Length: 180
Image (tube, rainbow, N blue to C red):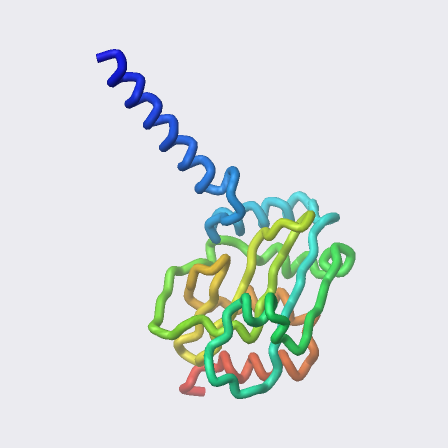
């Protein structure tokens, strides 16, 4: 009987440890909601001295297949790479303060992710959160940390000051609802 209790206790401890590791305390993945709450807290406290924003963009091309983030970034299939340091981010603090988890509304469509634009906020080499827009007029959506949500302009507006004007114009046209 005592042996059975010890095995049960050991099994419970293994499950508890696995839960802790996979819930973000020891792993690299963090839920989008939690990541944005942490990001908002960091911005509100003006704790951005180690913060960087990196934007990757693939220009106008006709890709025969959807691009993953790994294709765009890992394989270097981007045309633009823009790195924004903490000093530049501080100048745009009002935009950063707008980003929060309240804007995340679950959404799913049947199209695969197509990463033509990707940005990531990092601190000390660790990803805080990442963003991939899916521009398709009325059905536009966005991926935050790989999870799809209904489109919200605030997540694109935060990078507008750092993008070339022609890139902003193209994305604005792609995001425009079909009834305009």
